[in-house]
Length: 417
Image (cartoon, rainbow, N blue to C red; front, side, top):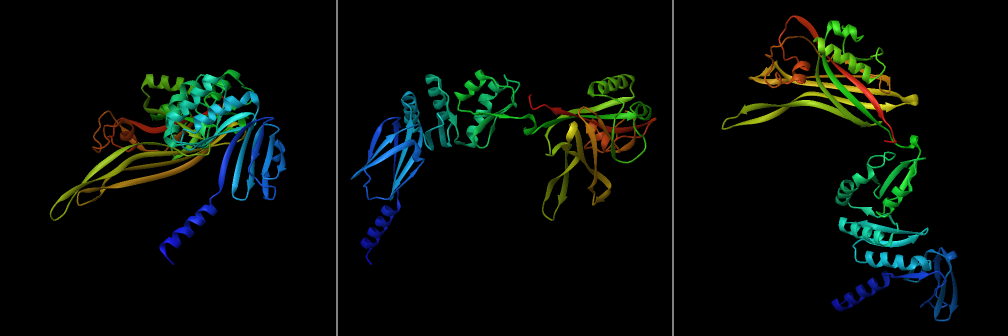
């Protein structure tokens, strides 16, 4: 078989396998003649929005109501978008604009302009928004938004979202953009502003929206006398216990401030984490220790990580009861484990769980036990770091017993914020 014959067969195959497709925009009541012979088998989807009549060599179509219809005849496809006379001019403006953009297509569904496909450029989104603003007409962007465009959109639209406290602070991509609003917090002005940006607003009940929990963390060094004031058990291993004598975070803060003023408590660090319910979040504090090793011809430096790591997994139960799973890991250089003057890394792992309520504080004890003084002669990597130095035992012994505790106060972040 010659090369010319093979080429001809390939072209014939491609021609036969490729479907012909054409798009039409019709106004309600408008007629259209399609080159479909009365003997051709046809398939019509959503045929209720049109009527048709065979006219020998042509098929006469009449648009009856708004919607989208597809007619297939052999390898030919005809896409009919039917809109009212009032919306026809507006829709054609969007169609003409979208035709200049890669990956996008305009549709008119449920009396609403929808832009589908793939949105690759922020510039294209801006042009769609400009047209919507000029025509004072909303649309819905159902297209998949490219990740780079998502980042720009999050930054550009954040100030608008923050004006409305009833919304979750940031909108999401799934992968289409959408903003969630709590049931009973409608705002027509805001919905219209988002509609001009192509962003739909969905209404959810409070229990349908994934809650977040803010964990307020306070690391403190307490004396034995102050631990009794706080209602803590001085002796014992790693564990978590409720601070039942304090109703909320403010009452605990007041007591801590009074103890700090007396010198019986020293706050080493205060931090906060925002965790999704049923998702793990983490707090770390540490560094890297340089280790020099020598060979026959050269030497090199490698780095070993050390420090502390807390992992929290909050679970929300009925009645705003919170179950908090806590994993604690401490790693630090230990001269007793040295080999050829290279210090080993000792690792301590502990875990526990506890049930508490919203704003009800938990205290974690048994992190370390030592004697404390104002002189720091511990291991060089962390002797002068307040939190690490206390937790990893980088101090000498002195006059009074102290222990490091972690106070965790969970706060539910309302879905309406």
